[in-house]
Image 1 (cartoon, helix red, strand yellow):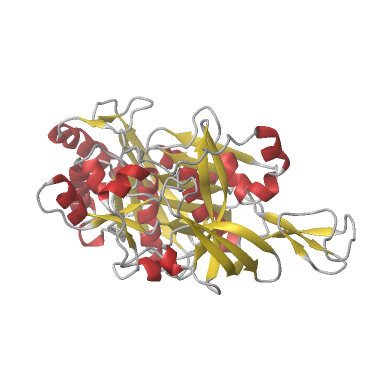
Image 2 (tube, one colour):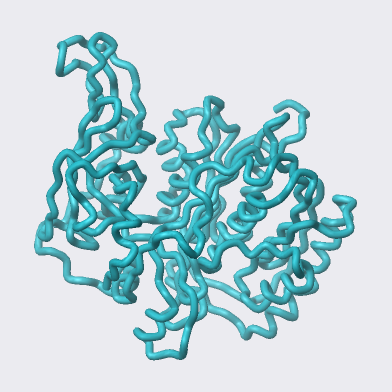
Length: 469
């Protein structure tokens, strides 16, 4: 890379449409009143698929320097998850794609690594807890992608930074455990607050500013986050949207909220407090929201899909629901998956040079004019289409029946049968417009079968009032 100063050039967020309300939790568990709601990933989503949904908005003609993926809930251990995101973005085989997993502090490492390499940092998390716990009520599923570059494209640059670290037992989870264990809240608060104060003071001094115009505090310890926000943010605090604490994605999600409103020359202080504290001071160079790509952060007025507690437990694997009595799918095999990588992950078809026929999946021989090996790659992941016909199958193997299959005619050519997601059967009709979304078809033998599904563009409106469970 050249010696030019690198900064954020674009950012995107993804928040699933599912919501688990506090009222639903209270009714299901017989607990006291609970307000608000938390975001909830669907049964066919994981941290990898959500990361793709955020990062896909940051692509342009330039390849990123590298791709770093931070999560506390990786879909695979002993296998790189970032490579699936890299493949789904159709980035070829050049460049580094790596994971930073295990702790929400990995978000800091991913941010710094992406800045140094003019790369993309992807932050994605699923947050779970034991039934009735604060983690269950206060967690949230989300993903964020931030792209760094240089020159006039940068809308925010890091002008100060500092970190503190300490070894103390506040939150921990052994490998394979479903939920984290927590120590008594006062102990964590006593340890965290001095570490945050030291990091904030050092970062502001490094940036040569007395106070930042916007302040973001992220911490898995709810009391610490509230106390630190009051101490260092006051009326300058940016809390983002009330979807719950989202682990590795939380600080980046709140940074995105700050970038949406920050004016040129203003500063943003962001603190990620996990086993210490990492503080960054950004100087904003562009207009508010100039680097925003894809949908804005959800507001209270956005349509959502309310999910019942039993459905949530099923999606999280805490209830083993009786599935339709059909054979389970076979485990996806490595060699054919590798041979069809561009199609399977990038959803790349082919278009005939002679007659223009679009083939999905790609073919060597045109089914219209018979020409051979005269094809151009055609990426369809960003294409819209319309439902030509569909079926609702209540007997097919699915973790969340019924399964909806639709034949989709793509804008610009091409037809393929896809599973429909994030929609109730009554939301599907011939002519409904759909977009593509990267999802997990199923998991068999420990192997996740990733592919693309169709998501009705207006599905959220059609299912906003539908209650599952």
